[in-house]
Length: 261
Image (cartoon, rainbow, N blue to C red):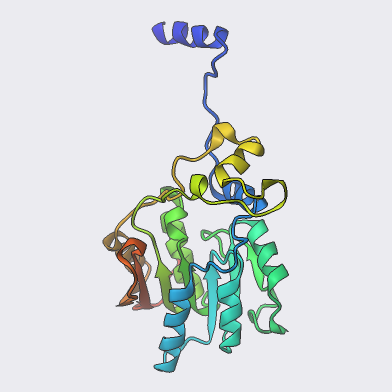
């Protein structure tokens, strides 16, 4: 009864009984890309991974095709093409895939991208990659998995293991996200010069802003164990600044087997 009386008081006082759900996943990143998220192509989160893939190939690793999960503006995919590697990119936001498509043209048409006749850049979640089993020699993914909801982590790691034949080249933040929303500037149209936080306010999301973009903040041991569950183990670490931790290569240690769960 006390709870009911309190709810009625809040209702008549004009206060909402339920707070709207915070923006997350596809909806969040579509809203951000609409304001110019990823527009600064000078910034590439995957530069270290790209350098590592090139070095591994020089050392004889079997990496002739790569899928970039969380491709953003597509710079990593374009650089892989220049290295003679078949490469495609996916991003949860359609805005990201469209941006990458507008910026980069494959040197040999879709043959540069994959063997399935699919677009070079597609909108797709890390939990549902639109490719057959073992479609690529490696998956590269930089600063993506920490954005996955905890309830989706196992679906994402299983998808990575399903699509990658040999290697996973990953960078996963192990700490909360800093001040990107309030400290960085939007880059397009009427949002030009505003912070991303202000731009989301302008789109009508003032009461739905997430408190944290990194929804799964875990250490290396957590991720290594999650990937070991699906047949991948640590191959090497990738040197990086301590604040940018952590990056590494995982290699397949057992055949992919679909979960029966």
